[in-house]
Image 1 (cartoon, rainbow, N blue to C red):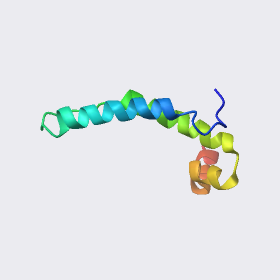
Image 2: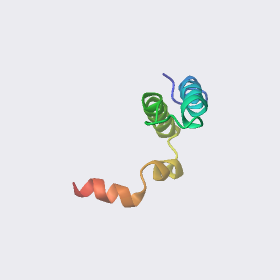
Image 3: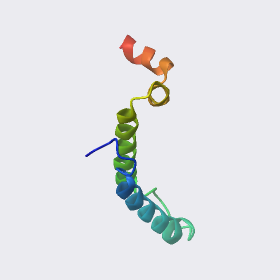
Length: 77
């Protein structure tokens, strides 16, 4: 996958959105929701976005993904 392409994660976003809005309308609004659905789709989309942001290779974006305060915690381990 070319993570430098702006639309690389679009398909995953659409899959998550379809799943989420179906669950929201069918279960959540009807008061039948006992769990939050679509976690698999969310994780796949989130991982794609993180890879996309890393591919941008901009220090500002890098700090947003992995803030300096978090880097210190990781470095101490």
